[in-house]
Image (cartoon, rainbow, N blue to C red; front, side, top):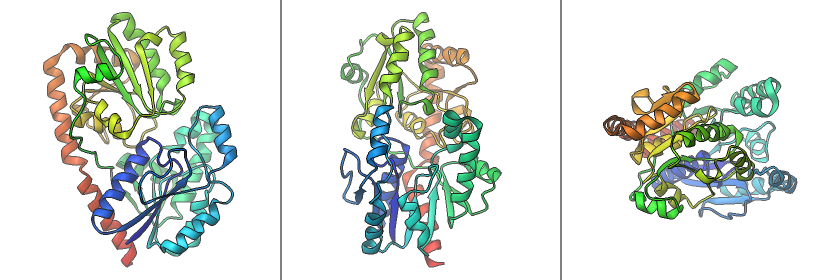
Length: 379
């Protein structure tokens, strides 16, 4: 099969990019052909199958003013994508980004009679609520229904998102297929991690991986860190990922925790993966994730996870695999409990890794995707 994939945020460091690369690797290994279309970013071509097309100069300028890296397609992108479609002649279109308005790939895709698939990676209702209140949330709900019902099938990373889409009014077939978790050959040791980010070796590290933005509830992590610092000054928060670091550095400064919070900015994927090793606790506060891929990655690295309760727990990660908190005081108590109780920590870590290995293999992900795509193609 020939599969044409699109994401507006590829190849930025995020769960969508990880998912696309994992899928592309798996499909290509099975003999399929894949191309990935995305707006042009400064990172350039991420892999041989990547086809960057012109991005919007206005969106790039506005985004840079508010600390956002994400871009949209430029005016001429429609015709570039049209040419790619003509030359590649895909058997199937696969969209990975749903935004408030149709993009150039979506418009080209809808003109075709070939099978159309959407992977619903992001709970856009929550994003709409953050930036536009209930009006924004309802707008994104309606947009979700409109786009999903134009697809042949919809893929979700978890069953809870399938239920969410059904509650909106989506009627097309929905298949929950979680992204497979990558196996990392070698992690940083505790000493290597501390040296890499210039953190005193006798201190503890709380690590969080992902975009630094409001949608990921980073402000909550910083408020939590202020209270943790009052109880123990030898604990650091390591925030790995791109995003609005300047804005949150200001918040950290006002909270008087700048000396205990490290913003790394974007890092190469290999270094991000290695950085789970050597950390003492993985902390997760996001309320908008549909799978929480970074939770699974931390579990694979045998790092205990403390998370604020959200829709993906326990639907994706059973409570026996991590420490779940309904509020910030409980979250803080869980962090200290994990740090102080070795037996409790090790038992949870072993259970978590076993769960991820059994439920999130990349081989299973590729098999399910190919079965679905072949069924659509043959039909």
